[in-house]
Structures are given as structure tokens and as C-alpha cells.
Amino acid sequence: EGSTLATMKAGKSYLYDGVGNSNNNFKTYPSYTTTQSEILMYYKNFYGSDYEPNTVVKAVLNGEYVEFDGPAKDQDYSDATRTDPVEYLIREELAKKITQYTTALLEMYQLFEKALEKVAQNCFSYVHKDSNVRCDEAVNIWDEAAAIQDGPNYLGSQICQDYFTCGFNYNNADKIAIANTKILNLFQVGQAAIRTG
Image 1 (tube, helix red, strand yellow):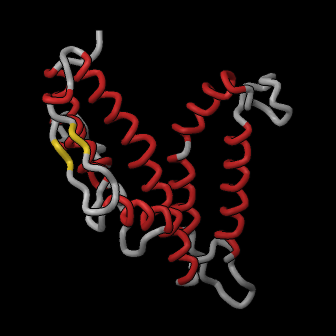
Image 2: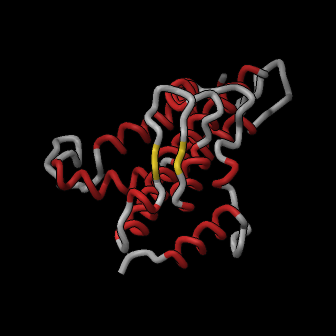
């Protein structure tokens, strides 16, 4: 059936006004902005220095026009560019995709940045023989970042079967995208480095 104007408004109220949503985090992503990861800098260079992914998601849900300060093309999500009933389905899908592939991605990279900053401040999980201080904050932040990757991992395992990119031999036998296996391995390597500094 697709979305209607009423379901779009309810979704906006849920995500941005906190109606029925006590864990209303998406509107504050990226949550860490004290320093910027390379990925966030690329986005800001392309879309403009004041770019926030949730501004775009809100514009999509509200059917608004978005102007960017960077070289990115402006986007028109208004009713003038859509025809009913497809307009609401397109808006819903765009909001989902931007949230999953941009907002969550930026949050993940910013959390990695935050974990690295904690390590730079001598926050190590493994205690040195001359020190009795143990700090798990950097590792916990790294784990939060890795957990965000769960959505794309699921999607990758669904899509890899279509493109024969499942498993190390690309034979789709184990139904796990090789990209997911590699990225999870990198998360583990990164976590070990974060633990030891």
C-alpha cells in the first residue's frame, strides 16, 4: 500500500519530536563533533560546512527544498516534483536510506574518531605494569561504532546472493557477504589496537 501523508507525519513525530520514542537519538547524530573524522570532513566539503544529515531527512519527510552551500546539487523534495501516491513512498524510502547509509555511517565514523581521541588521552583497557589505571571508555565507544554497522551487514548478506559476493570463494554457500566478513575483521583488529593503545 505504501505510505500516506498521515504515516509520514507520524514518522516525523516519532523521529524528531520524540512522540512514543524514548530513545530519540537519530536527530542528534552525529553525536560526537568535537573533532571530525575524514568521512565527515568529506561530507561537509561536498554539502557545505553546516551540513547535518538530519536536515536532509527532515526536508524529505516534510517535502521541502534543500539548498547546499557546497558543490552538491540542491534537492527538491516538494510536492511539485512528485505525483501522488508515489510521492510518499519515495519520501519514506529516501528517509530510510539517508538514515541508514548516511546518518548511521557518519555516527559510526565519528564514534571511531571519539575512541581514537580517548586513546590519545591515554585511555587504555590493558593496564601497563607501571600503572594501576584501567580505562574502558575508548573500547566501549569503539564497540558502539561497530554495533552501528549491523544494519549494513544485514543488507550486505541479503544482496550478496544477487551479485555472487557471498563467502570467500564467492559461491554463495555460506550466505555471508565477503565485505561483511572483512569489515568485522577490521573492527576486531581496531578494537585490539584501541585496547592496547
